[in-house]
Image 1 (cartoon, chains in turn purple, red):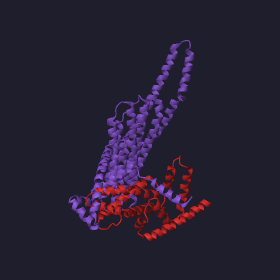
Image 2 (cartoon, helix red, strand yellow):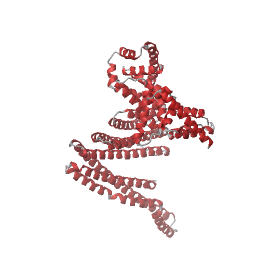
Image 3 (tube, chains in turn brown, purple):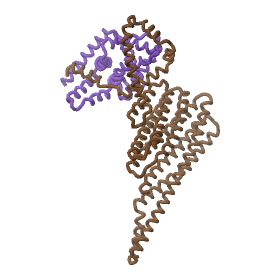
Image 4 (spheres, helix red, strand yellow):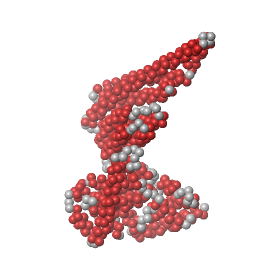
Length: 414
Length: 185
């Protein structure tokens, strides 16, 4: 290869890399918004613009008139072009997942985050955009109708919005880690409190939205799509819980080393709220265990009744075969215990048994946390935090096991 | 020259309250800055974030208003160069001036219909550039991948055009020797 070809290839390679149009536009809008926020720009708005531009322009450019005219024309062209981009941006802002402009909206938000000047502002924006994802889901649910195609589309769009929510929360968690490494403890407490407050709201809202998603069983395709979107929501709930735990831990740890009592008192209040939340979680888990137990009972009774009915039918069909029927009855009874349904049932019973004592275990740990917190000793906040974490992991473990139990339970239901 | 006068006017207009003027500067240079950054970092998202940062930093510099800006394009590229270096410094990694990731993307873009030879040549070019010293690599890339003139490179690097011309000549000589050796082997 010759040097001239090498140069040509480097040049071609350079021109082969171009920014994505959506990013370019979104970043431009965010940049101009940042300029409009600056005091320099605001002050300039109050002054007669032409004089100021001409004056400073003339200061370094003697032949400004020659240049000014083409620039003026260019400004007009740019204004027309820009009005087009404003239309695009406003269309993007009101878009929902599945719309053409939705990726622009996401890009615009990302650009806004990257242009935010402080970590606090960045975190604030990330949390606000996570809230926007939930609003989108709410709108999708409100627009839903009964046609299967629309339902599948809606389920897919919900999944898309929730995936972006999860990605956003990943970014919040990463930001928390970065802030945690930095030296500014006061800033860390402020941001972790902001994230913690908002993650609780996010969790509550997402749970409500989850309850609004109607599961249509009549169409298998619809049911599958809805199942997928519900699974994505469950993953997002886990992510929210993680974010919540991380922010709480950071808040408590950083508050413990900060001088003064204000941050510590705030952290203690936050721990109190978390303890109450945890108690509710334990209660719900307990109820879930009871309900799975009842379901098992019901299925077993139904299975026994069905087997009895089958045997009765056989008896009635032929008195001559009475002896044979009894044998069959016995054999069916024997088979029943080894049928796949009952094998599932046994495994299910075992699983439920494994988690049955978890709520009690969690209650004890959370009681310990309450006790330590009741001592009003701010130096023990980290101990309370550790107890809360322990409780959370017990409850989480129980929930995961129950979830596996529920999957096992499905074939029995069918 | 004409371009620089226009750029300086756009900066003045921005300071006078016309933010769209900065938008026009952005339109003019965003592709070049993105290209510059993309060549030096791995991943589209990082390139986008850093490019956004370049324009924001430029605005922050401009709005202080207490420093005379002689060459807007040079200022943008200087800020881009420092942003990329900072990115590597923060990550504790060595600054390479050419990301293998980006180059592979370029190689992948060469369609199947184009001769396989081109892909091969592009790989060879990458190896050759990689063999250059960091300073020579930077010069060659600025000159050819970003299509910057010797004067512009001199402004960006804060050197005289004569020094840059000589250094670039030497870098190309070295590149030629590397290519020659590679072709022989």
